[in-house]
Length: 116
Image (cartoon, rainbow, N blue to C red; front, side, top):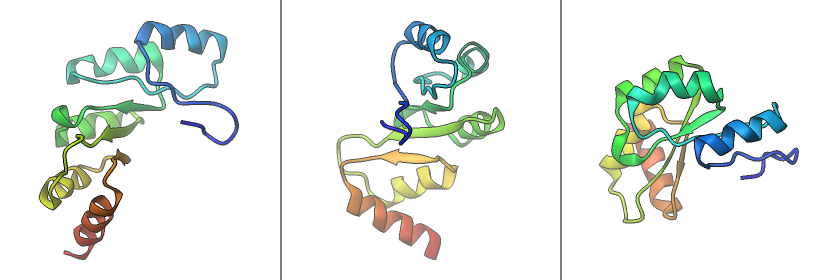
């Protein structure tokens, strides 16, 4: 994902991200966070810009913890079509980015979420 100034947000193995930050301290990285119990260690070790959190592990509490650590929350919608209520659940948690192949469905869910 290009940031516009030539830097990238790579999603890679944590050890690779550590080495990458040693070579370019200003790069914004986005490690995957699969367990809430790994949050503080990853914040300290990696100082990421954001976390890529699998849809299946997203909870309001986890999103709150990540946001309180000063980091952003990105997620990928599952490949299957998501119903509006499921999108509302994730939007309501306050995630910063939802990546999906179903843009129209997400757009409709965003619009209906803020109209309710």
